[in-house]
Every structure is written in structure tokens, then in C-alpha cells.
Amino acid sequence: MNKIKILHMYADMLDLYGDSGNMEIISYRCRMRGIECIIDKYSIDSPQPNFSDYDLIYIGGGADLEQQHISEDLSKCRDGIEAAYRRGTFLFLICGGYQLMGKYYRDADGTDIPGLGLFEYYTIAEPNRRKRCIGNIVIRAQLAGKSVDVVGFENHGGQTHNVKTPLGEVLYGHGNCTRSSHEGYFEKNVIATYMHGPCLAKNPEISDYIIGYCINRSNENAELQQLDDKLEKDCRQIMIDRLLKK
Ligand code: GLN
Image 1: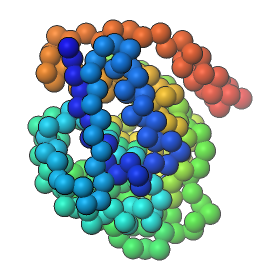
Image 2 (image 1 turned 60 degrees about the horizontal axis):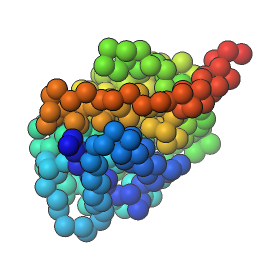
Image 3 (image 1 turned 90 degrees about the vertical axis):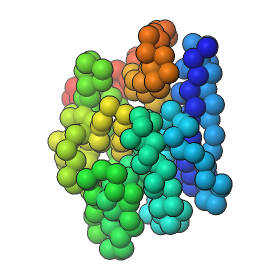
Image 4 (image 1 turned 30 degrees about the vertical axis):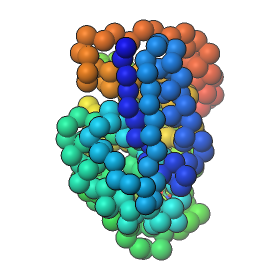
């Protein structure tokens, strides 16, 4: 039986707009296919796990305050997370979690919250708190050789710069910076995005990209059985039509 082991970090503090729902979606889509899905949780002062034991590490989004609260603890996990990522563990990161894997996040007060520096990007919050990037967003991503239009909801003051390999091209909304042309960060085993929603409930292709990657780590011939995603895709199409066809 195929099996996926997930570490969900700081679920009690980084859970904006139902970000934890992403783990419910992964778990549901695994259950429908008979894939065993184990989700462990880690938060401040939990015993340090062996991060490399996991196929997927997931971190959701949060307000500046929560990001400050977890940053010291997160820095203690740096070596473990980096080693896991280099050995092929998938990192799925939403908004605040996305920002904290870069070099730093400078919040709206100008205080720097150090990131883990796994990636070259860095984030500076717009000092005017009224000028946040808020609203629905549509991006076009290339996943496993297929072009997919992805929808989500963004709400961030942070402007993320120096992203060399974005997740997608912005068709509607802001993305990495105010009115940016690109959104998120992508590598074979990293998806980082500003999209809440939760993102995976609205975009089954992203869930399946992640699940497919994870099961292929232990079984490279594993085929991902297709699920009936008509409802999810119809809902998404309504949003795309509403936002793009004015
Ligand atoms: N606090 C960060 C910002 O405003 C992240 C917000 C979020 O996770 N939605 O940019």
C-alpha cells in the first residue's frame, strides 16, 4: 500500500482562511485512492522530529504577530528542514510560511523577522497597512507539463522580491508584489504561494501534483488514480469566468 507521511507545522498558529483545510484535502484524496496518509503535528516546544522522515512538510499562513511568535522556534528547526528538503521532502508553504523560508520578512513596523534562508527571495511589507494585496487571484501555473489555471484568495502586506522561479503568471489579482506579473515560488519539491482558500480545495491539480510527487519517492511506478473532480472544476470555472471575462 502506498503511504505518505506529512508534518504539519504550527497548525495552531498559522491557519489563516482555513489553511489547515489543505491537509484535509490531501488526506481525503489519499483516502479515496487507498493511500495511507499520516499527519503529524509540530508546534512551539514540541520535541524535534526527524524532518527527513517526512514526505511533505506543510506550513500555513498567519498575521505578522504569529510569524514573530514562531520565528525563534522555527530557526531551531532550520538544519532539520534544510536537510529534509535537500533529500527530497516536499515543502508546501502558504503566505506567512512562504515568507519565512526566504531570507527575511520585514514587517509593517520595519522589524525584520529572520527567515530560514532556504531560498533567495525576501519579503518587505508595505508600510502603509491600508495598501495590502487583498482579494481573489487567478494564476496560470505549469504543473507536470500541463498548464493549469489556479484560483485562490490573497491577503498580504508582504512584497516578495527576487523570486527566480515563480509558481505562475498572474491573470487576475496581485501575486508576489502589488500588481505583480508573477505569483509564488516553485521547484520540483517546493510549492510556495500566497493563495489561501484553502488552495487545495479549489485546485485539485495542485493536490495531485504533491501527492504524486510524494508517492513516487518510494514507488516510482505508482500511478495516481483519477478522481471525479467535476464539482471542484465547475466551481473554479465560475470564479475564473467571473474574474476574467468582464
Ligand atoms: N503577515 C504576512 C503579510 O501580511 C502574511 C499574511 C498571511 O499569511 N496571509 O504579508
